[in-house]
Image (cartoon, rainbow, N blue to C red; front, side, top):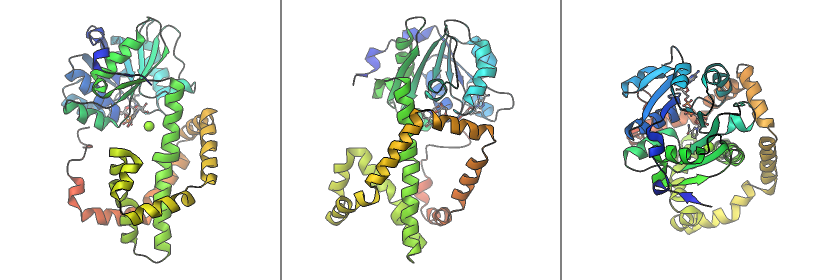
Length: 338
Ligand code: NAD
Ligand code: MG
């Protein structure tokens, strides 16, 4: 796999381009501020009455209504929630897109699954940082960056790849590495990762462990520490040096338990289910289901979210975190500002 860096990017290609960043959420605030600090001509596009407007203006950014921002710009980066993107695109972006413009995304979801169908005469590509927006911003401020994926879907003017490389570099990605992929690969692996491992797999694992201990009569506080709190310590070791690094650091007893018990928790059966989940993503079934859920006012989504919030692990956690004030120091997210 080829990796590109700052030296491979020609930032001059962006010098005469007007850039509109649509949305000022996790990714939007990071992209717009990094682009501005890299010296580029950037405005933020937001709808009327947006709560994000004050934050963007406080950061010294110019804010326009989405359609005006698109109309003004040569390059439009769409950083609105994926479930809203098709509607925002249809109503506010497409009407102001002119031939030869550059339409950028940070995730292939809308385009890959056909929820957004860009006209044949605009350039379409994605620059997806492999990290949350708050890290994209904080790493940039430290003179570093977060690795970015780059994929070209449609190239009209012949320079989409180079423009994408420059954009990725301008938000800090060139310092960490830019990896080329496709819309299909980026979208499908991203969805699979969050469903089966990162969000879905992990929270189900934590909850099942917590419930097993509490149902056996152990104190919820102990169960919380063992099954949730300590997850970070283990993940830090994995993040820093992989699975062997974690096994090097934990006790021999823990390592033996890991080696002999792990595959009894995540079994061949689990892997079969993972393959099913992947197939649902590939066929577009998941995307259709999620869009239908959004069209129905997210009824199931809200119910399941509320059930999750009411789980005793959340109550116990809140109390225990109150005993550990250092957990709240130096957080990346500051809801007032970003
Ligand atoms: P977010 O929910 O944090 O922010 C969304 C923003 O869109 C808000 O500022 C909101 O005001 C704005 N918005 C809503 N409706 C709008 C409209 N009509 N016009 C203009 N702006 C509107 O979203 P996010 O997590 O930053 O995700 C944006 C994109 O980045 C998505 O495609 C997502 O998949 C991708 N992405 C996110 C992450 C991440 O860690 N959050 C990482 C990589 C890629
Ligand atoms: Mg992801």
